[in-house]
Length: 234
Figure 1 (cartoon, rainbow, N blue to C red):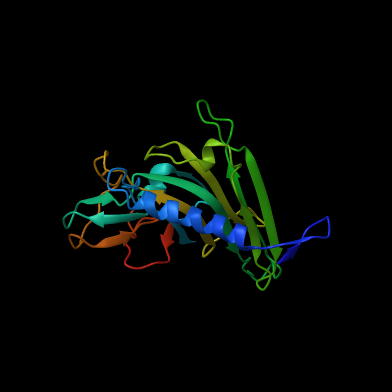
Figure 2: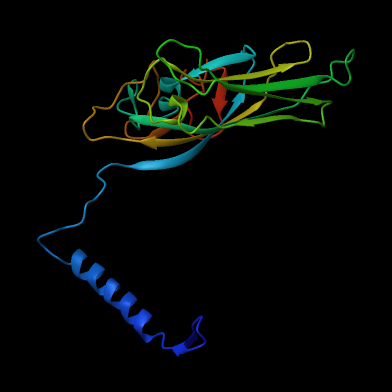
């Protein structure tokens, strides 16, 4: 029994019966062989990619949609590989880096930044940018940024050379920082109507049918400016 505003009591049975009838109708609808439920016929998964900058890191790099789709792929043969997914969207980019003492500058600073460009013809990005910094080897620099929800940067994109975002990691003297950690949170999606796309750069020594992770710039492990932290890499 429940008490109403008028002070009278009424049974909960009526409300319970209503919910029970609703559940029965839902079950009957799902079991109706003439109206089968709609199903998604494509795979979609959220994923966080992690990269570390290497000795050839230039200090700043513009990541494209093709780079992101090339970062997780399947081998067709020993020398051919294809993107595992057909579309990708960015949820968030995070960078962590430390300054490295070099003797003359014992408290070397680190500067990291993320930008979702918006001043590119035909591209409607967030136009958002953020910078973080740290001083000393034990004080990491940190920055994290999401694209605006209604911007093109936050929507599913196919494999193109258009920019997705820009990442930066340098020291206080504007020299590239090696070993910076870059996390990219994405959502991948595939489509049965699109043929798998080949990677933008050649690979070698692959095992057909195996899955691999590539670099942030889409290049092979030996040449990439930011290697994947996952294995196997190629």
